[in-house]
Length: 371
Image (cartoon, rainbow, N blue to C red; front, side, top):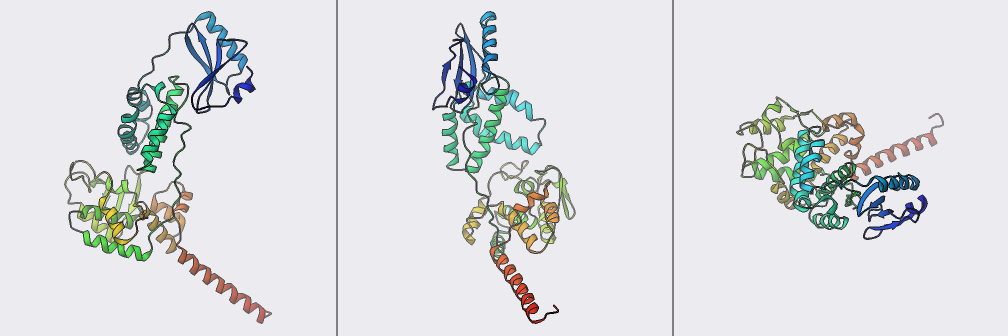
């Protein structure tokens, strides 16, 4: 076995091993993910000596000779995924993350990962099992499947770093391609949305209507509005303590202030409490949004696109991008560029104005030599 040959061994659908002719107890284990690891076997026990791309064959042989002389310690017990994920892995990040991040990751962990992999030993989680789970989840929620896959990858990478598994079976599972959307509401669609929300104001879905209207009026994220607390309201400002990018201020116009003042009458800490559990904020999707999308003919518009619409209207009205960035709560002003889409009619109108102006200048220069 040579370093070059070891690195060129091709992965297959299942893992396999190729033994070294110089030291027969040394082999290269090739995983479906493409990872190649040196393995030393002594008296039926196996020890991983490191990845082929990091450990030269001569070093692997020397270490294998040493293990043949001294023996391999009993293998470390491999925990099931539930014990590992809720134990050492969660402890490694829970205290360092924002409370909202912890809530989100716990939701994915408890709702998606543990039901599927919780009872499996870490070394029994295969790439095929991950692929099958991911494809099934992707049929109904491709974006959610991507988020859950990212979390699974992180947890199994941590398991590799702790020496509990030799490879990460989730590493080579490809996420769903998510097109970067530039959809936002036109002025006519905003008018129709406003009329639809008026029809639901004060009804049994009035709270959802208020949330949707606030998203459009402020450009805030859904999580920032539905989890809004009474103590975060400060006159014509919302001082959000746990926004996605850290504490930030959301400025309120007259109509937004009116909604907030009305919601201040809600009992408890949250302005938009869950009907089932009033001590908690409203959670999950907004059924009213799905209904209104169909009603006004904008089924291709996501709830988050209301944030795009807010940003785009700012740009159309001439608000400088640095100001838009602050309104949206972006740490990096460059992030604002992906929200600053301008509708085709606006582009066409601008092109016509610029073209007419240049034509005028060209005409004047042709008839007036002093121009």
